[in-house]
Length: 196
Image 1 (cartoon, rainbow, N blue to C red):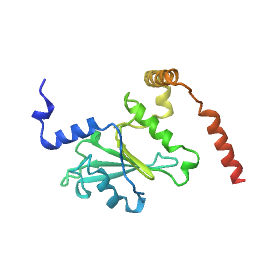
Image 2: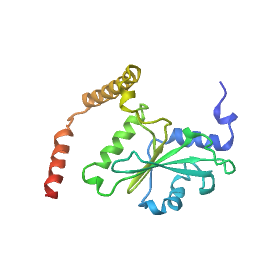
Image 3: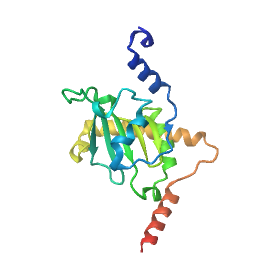
Image 4: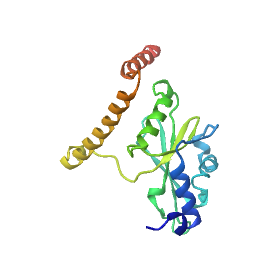
């Protein structure tokens, strides 16, 4: 097997080493505005995708976000405008306004970082005041019919079992494990009471 540090080109080596060595997301003291996203995002991703710029990338808005704005960013061939390698894409997640009232963003971040160690979540590259930038995984959301398919439902069950085994291991190893269910439900009820 060849040493990838010797046989690959400079940009590939740089990408390989940065993405592989990153254990914590890069934290930026900035708030990104959706209306200025195109100019604001490139300084943030420069350390992980130094060759990307406005002229050789394409943004794609994903409508699936309920409380957040989810945008894909992909490198394209500047002439054909075709995506070069979809799996190198990035996801920019802008948190919805006031969504922090019912979502603890620190717990979300810690959970995503932990799950990404086991390939159960995307790798987080950057964190900023109102969002995250993480790796893109090609695919599509399952339809109800697909979820009912035996093969797909077995694959989902295997991933859920892997996830729950990790949680069980973590809880077993913690000194004082705590439940998030009851405090989260109370938070939701308080938010409902505040609206009335």
